[in-house]
Length: 278
Image (cartoon, rainbow, N blue to C red; front, side, top):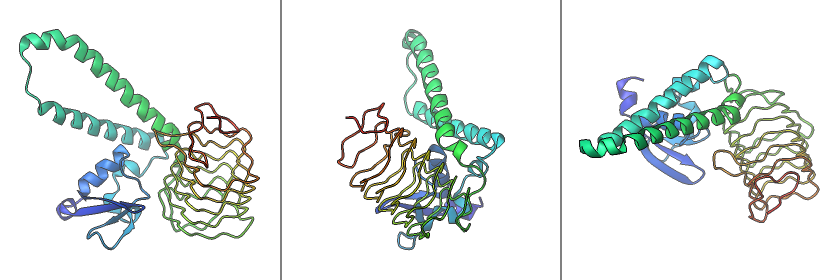
């Protein structure tokens, strides 16, 4: 990133909520920390918006190769380094304790530091299991619909596919598919973690064994859809949102619904499978 890019400021929009302005450096940092998403839109003036994925200078290098072990290791190291710098800044803002107090608290500080390290590692492992491992290959937002296409982080709002089309094995993590019309489309085994599927038409679609952890399906049309053995559990404290979705005739046999927000707004039990038990 050159000096001009570093000095630039950006507004970030998710749905109707606008954040910022942020420096380009902070946009990259928040992407690494998961506070911003690749499906968000950005603007330099708060008026003209474009997908974040179209601003290559805002995408951290460590997020460009998550489909390989080496790439995931680079991401993990970068994210850990950012967390450590944040902790250092917070520590520097507080005065040094007296020597006597420091000795008395040393043991508890060591234990606390160990616990924090464990938590960071567990979060990182969970992120790769539920997000990073699903981002296989480089996203190609211009790629034609087809089996195994990678649209992770892409904006595909309002896309229309003919009945019976295939998106089997689709990788669309953190993608925006609002108002998409995908009736009777084969989405079996698709990765749709954190995807925005608000008002999407998925009537009679095959979502068998699809992963929709943390996805937003509010007001979606899921009538007659097959969600057998799909994963609709919450992810990183973000619940799958099915509020006001149409599910008449939908098949949820074997579907994991832990903590999902059901069509009537109630939260399913953490161990709910096949049906939403409060």
